[in-house]
Amino acid sequence: MTLITIITDLDMLSRESLNQLYHENPCLWFYFVQGAPVYSTVNYNVSKGVANGTGPYIMHSLGFHALEDVEKYNNEINVHANSGDIIVLEILPAVIYVEVPDADLRQWDHNLIHQDKLI
Image (cartoon, rainbow, N blue to C red; front, side, top):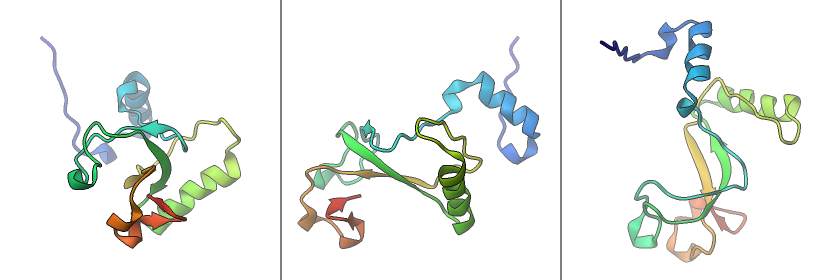
């Protein structure tokens, strides 16, 4: 008989247990590579062509809920990272921003446009 334990609160785990969980289960890792192509896995805006399976879009940046999380991320990137390094974030980003190439910018809210690109 196999016993499956469902963990609903990762804060309950010790740092050692959490590291072991991630080390033994690579499917729990998510990777962000700025500039890498990605495809949508959700129907974000079907009428404007951003739907499940569409793309490729370009990974642009990460967004976080709290300013302190942004500061931790920027510190990891700007102080400790060299080109090609893998950075392990302690806090999951709230969102991954992607660039939508060839988007008709007139159809989109101006808050989504950055440097003449739909993000």
